Amino acid sequence: MAHLLELRRLRKSYGPGTEALCGVDLAVDRGEFLVILGPSGAGKSTLMRCINRLVVPSAGDVVFQGQPLEDDGHSLRAARRHIGMIFQSFNLVKRLSVLTNVLAGRIGYKSTLSVLCYYFTREERGLAMDCLARVDLAHKAHQRADRLSGGEQQRVGIARALAQEPQLILADEPVASLDPKIARNVLGYLKRINREEGITVLCNLHQVDYAREFGDRVVGLSRGHIVFDGRACDLTSSVLAEIYHGGPATAEEV
Ligand SMILES: Nc1ncnc2c1ncn2[C@@H]1O[C@H](COP(=O)(O)OP(=O)(O)O)[C@@H](O)[C@H]1O
Ligand SMILES: [Mg+2]
Image (cartoon, rainbow, N blue to C red):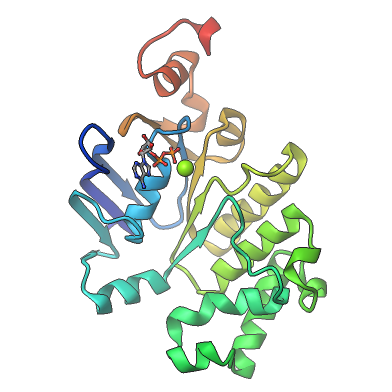
């Protein structure tokens, strides 16, 4: 069967001398929990944003469910519906309720008018409550989003992505603003959703510890190049040196 997602010779340049992605090839299968590991500036966000075309690639293809993604409105909108995104800064609407924030995950399925009127059906509200239950936050549904702690807000971010009924979740440094204990808790929810529901997750991280703990497969990105693609347990110090310094280094430097 075809891969869920394939990147073929993907390049992105933001201008002369800023090659953020230098011809990335990557195939992701259904059900994988894939960590993209790399230091700041490696190209992780660019890679993720090229997948749902928040960033337009300079060259190469993104193939999702066997279909190359192009900039014609219809097929892109259809693909985006099935790709949930989770952000470092949560991106919730602070003054709205938790439930309304989760319902925002449905907007790709709705008309502009019903979105503008905040009109959601009983079924959609039921689905949103179910998504909140999957991150153990059903009891906070009617609170304002900004009353929740950071970890809880990111779980709302996960619930919003789930409300899309996604085939793929893209999480761009989802725990970079959280303390380690909370970060592990949030990554645990993502992992559980991956394991128990079979939803494919791509997760950008810059911390090796979390990649080791949560990644099944880890892709190491350095200056726009994939320099490692393997199991988390095979992240040796020389591999880490290559990811973090762009070349071989001694273990002490890692
Ligand atoms: N909008 C942009 N305009 C110009 N350069 C950018 C832009 N976004 C990212 N870059 C550059 O592209 C490279 C990769 O950035 P990014 O994808 O954000 O990496 P990461 O998420 O791994 O930190 C960096 O050199 C960064 O400065
Ligand atoms: Mg980034």
